[in-house]
Length: 117
Image 1: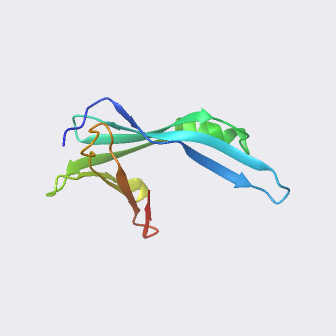
Image 2: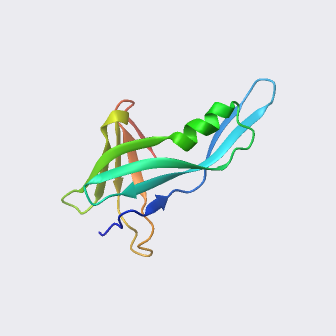
Image 3: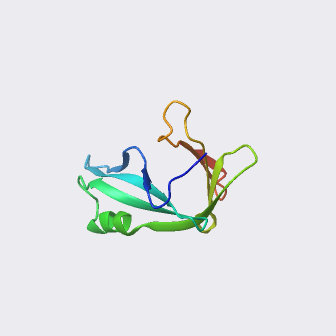
């Protein structure tokens, strides 16, 4: 598996939503971006696509300023392992056989013992 350095791998659209008791719908649509560096470091940032009715302007600013740093390596099966110890997150991924530009991840939060995506 070969990753490209200094290239952002971008997720699908993610919607951060809230529906209040009064029926008001709040939403910010964004993407997660992973960037790998040749020193073994990886960063996650977020790119706001549409601040459609944020509950608070700070919500949009928080996403735009978000940056989480971690390390990456490959395990004995050739899977890409990204560890973000500060946030208790472990991303395990592999490029798809059909389209080598697609990099799906299984995300595990050890603090909550919960898997995502």
